[in-house]
Image (cartoon, rainbow, N blue to C red; front, side, top):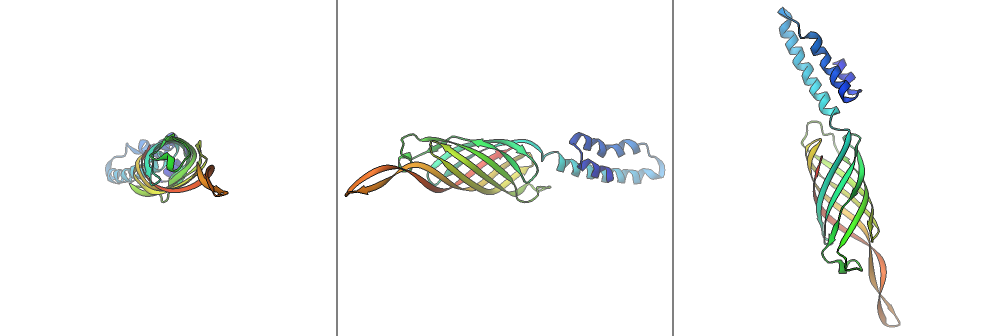
Length: 209
């Protein structure tokens, strides 16, 4: 209805008022118009439900956490917080401890823990509408404390409601690690510091709300 269309362009509370206004105006209909009025009200409320479904969930603050394992090998637990602009775009920041099972093979340190700090952009690839399973994308851009630059795009499946869903994704991670390399000088092999760009894949499982 025109009033429901008006609701789409107004804040949530105002939208609810404009949707329910016709019901308050016409509840006293009687007689031969009663049946038509009931049908009209049913269609109107159905339209209102669609309006609220599309206006309530998609704006506001959001958060999610994810756990993953990579073939480097490592395991991590990531926490993100940000703002949801619409169904397709959420921006935020994230951090999470990462544990390297064999750090000596990758990083010139015996410390097994690392801490990535990232800027994150994520969203749905297709409209959610009334779907419960949809594809999503996510991109992390930042750095790992003690190592360096990190870029991680992710694509996966989102299962659930707009404000409550499980995430299953596959990530490609480009990570600069402060490692080492062998250098030969005058037939003598020495181990020297080096910044190594490493590529790895990870499987992540998370929850978004």
